[in-house]
Image (cartoon, rainbow, N blue to C red; front, side):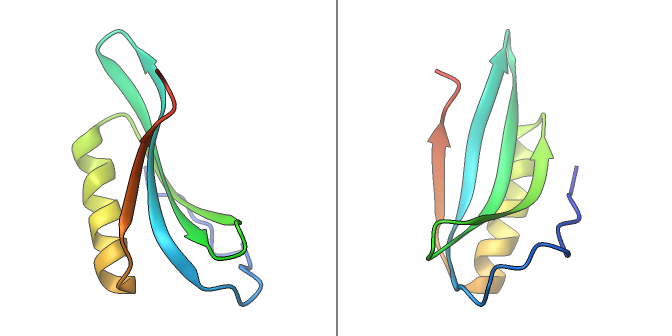
Length: 77
């Protein structure tokens, strides 16, 4: 599900990468979080998904449009 975070002000900070994080895992499914990470350490949420392919597609789209890399992490282990 794409999140509406248009009201989050990054305080003129530049995005440095897109976060693609696995934040929860139950059985064979997981919960993926996609967010912009700014140079000051703040984040702007962009989406939360139960399917990796949908999360990866959004992360790829955002990274391409902003010209920044994707950093993928597994916090559910």
